[in-house]
Image 1: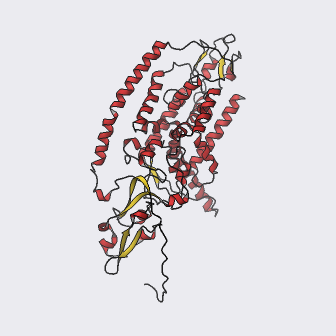
Image 2 (image 1 turned 180 degrees about the vertical axis):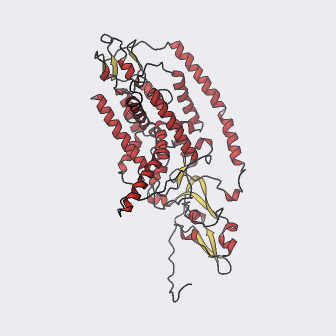
Image 3 (image 1 turned 135 degrees about the vertical axis):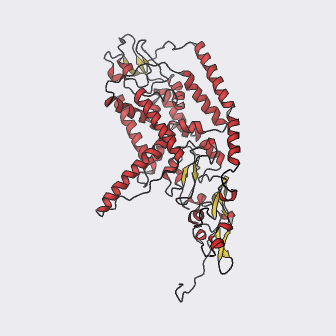
Length: 511
């Protein structure tokens, strides 16, 4: 029953969380958002004490239940392993492998030190929840949307409009490539080695594995009944059972319970009994390896500031285009507080990007620098930020985006509008336009008399919120005459009042 409960729970969480990422029509209930709140690293960065205490308590009680039944990337690996064993590798057997303490703790140390140095890219890449989120958004979702569009075409042909067609976009080549490489790496390791990624690279697995060594309930081997047949080790996808010595490495055991059903001697059980096991390695070996990975990690870390400084110098040089024609400061999503706050708390899970109804969020490439790759930024090629929309800030599990009410969103200034008169069609072509003013929800862009009966935009940056309506609609090409420049620290815009337009009586057609 333990295995059946674990399998059922895992599948329910995995399917619901995946569907929540894929849902573009807002069909699923908002309560599914709670599944993102119980993920380890987002909860840690959000300082969600209740969730962290709960995860730690569960691990102390029964081991790495989180890795087995809550983490979507862990469940994804189990699905790949299951497919491998029941299709092309029906006779596949796992086996005991010695643990690589050096690599595991080197990864954890590097993640922590680099994070506090302001370089969060590493934790973004290897955080299991965020890695699976990017795989879903950039690989699974386009396929899902393609299926939706196919159904829409079929149903619409018969006059049924239950489904509607939606645009399929590749928001970022770099995010797609990283998502694809992550998928291929995880799938390969799971196909061939089971949970090797969880027990070698994943920092969450390493930390929870350390806690799990002290858990009360464990999978235990009764040495008096064990005949060292190796059936349990052959079914252990974590490769943590040493059948010859009747020992289990609890730092790697993910409580999958596969071993329980395959022991013909009934020597394996999941219970409270305590039994000391001989250490796998001597203290001297442990200390030697600790010194090695600390020295290696510090050597790499000390070279990082110079690399980052070189990258910032390169970005600041402005080699590509004239300064007035390109955005100098990236626009962080509403609720980010500041660029620094976003970079320190965002794990690049891309849930906000997937959920944005206006499709104005995309993964960054180098707009935030190297450390901010894949983190969300606003762009207005496909639309503009809905004035009343607060979706992105409401679904962020790590509190990188502070939840905003509509009233707070209306006064949150993510950037300020910049007008370049020489690019405006009114100036260049001597024709009326005014599209930017018509699409400004705060009246930060107004049309004032210009010459020859024409009007030209006038900017009031104090009441601009940086929604991008003016930039999106501007007809000037190849460079827009009006664009939004991001605020590194989001400010509070001044309140605006709607102007009452005088009604004019039309006595004749205007053409």
